[in-house]
Length: 233
Image (tube, rainbow, N blue to C red; front, side, top):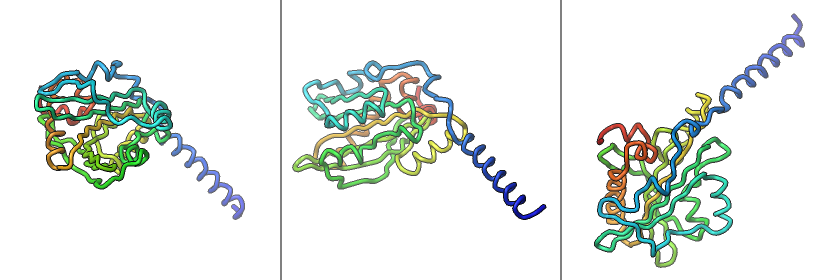
């Protein structure tokens, strides 16, 4: 066999292998097609634990350009403010996207807040303890003028809660290798105040009471079945 023929054969085999690998890594089955349909508006109660809806305060609203992007990224969004008997307020924002392939990924708070003129003064990883297991979360602080907003958020890709960044990418890659397109949920809670430690404690309490107020399927959608199934009813 001469060198030219050998080179052509090797090149052909390489192209075939690349094509096969690309096909294997291209997700084709959307997980969102399987579970029963749901609506965030009715799934999340307006009252739970010590908290009730406060319609007088609207959470941070994206500008028109951001709104257009969010409509492309998400199938459903929910933004509410809750208040307890002591007058403490927590803002809740949830976004759901049925297709978390590479072309359509969750829009992270780190991007959203900065795009609206906030300065990100803290960005770290954390863990939020609940009776259903520990949630891997991101802890942020966004500041604009006199407004200081501590933020806690997590992402659920498919059936598992994760942090943004490398963990999120590895989770999507695992689904890609299995030929599945996962759905995704981004859950963000925040409050306004200068004491970040106290704010995070309040947010943890809020999340714990919200999860306790959900039925099991709804809770699994928010935090993933791998966490929701660890404990609790």
